Length: 70
Image (cartoon, rainbow, N blue to C red; front, side, top):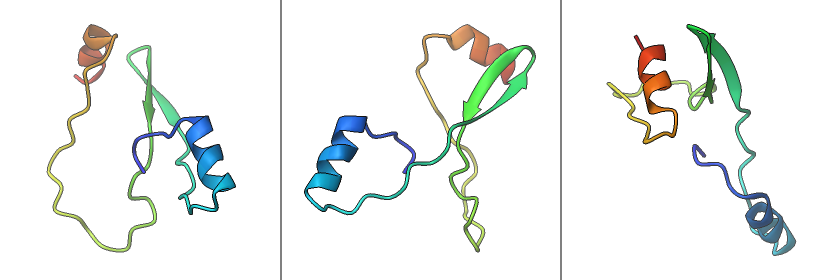
């Protein structure tokens, strides 16, 4: 899952015995002095996907993220 669930949503699902996937760990790397959070969506996938790009946004720190992507 790429969108983190709120803790209360996960807790409610667990109480109702609704299966939930484990949350992805949020990792970070530093690019030009700005911490860039990311998750490894397809780390354990055995085949290659036809993905050419992923667009994420908008962000409060739009300008910082734009500069970090250069």
